[in-house]
Amino acid sequence: MKNAEIPKAVNALFPKIRVGDRLAAKKMIGPKDPSQIEIRALGIVIDIDPDEWRIYVEWIVPEMSRLVPIKGCMGSIHGPFEVSDWLSDVFRI
Image (cartoon, rainbow, N blue to C red; front, side, top):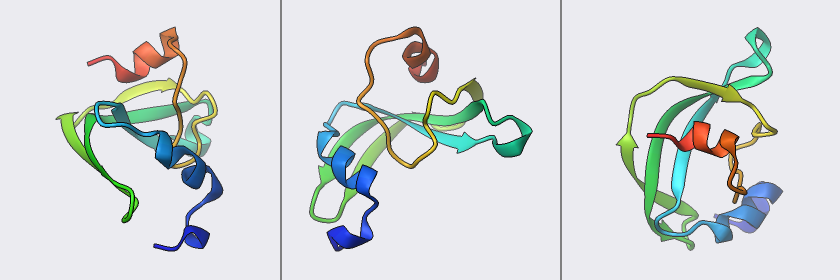
């Protein structure tokens, strides 16, 4: 994949992802509730292929539904985050 095809935020944040990081798959709630996102799955990064821009994840909680405040997480990739109550709510297993 050419860097020109990769969104600017992803291009900046992807290199910061490390094996062992937790990852949350989220869904935007949209007009129904624009202040929240739904956490749909939690996983741990097990491998990274920087040449292919791929992250391999072991899904430790593959099916879930947890609503949390959106906190600006509207794009496809975010972080790293400072420790906070919100972060604990998102990644709590």
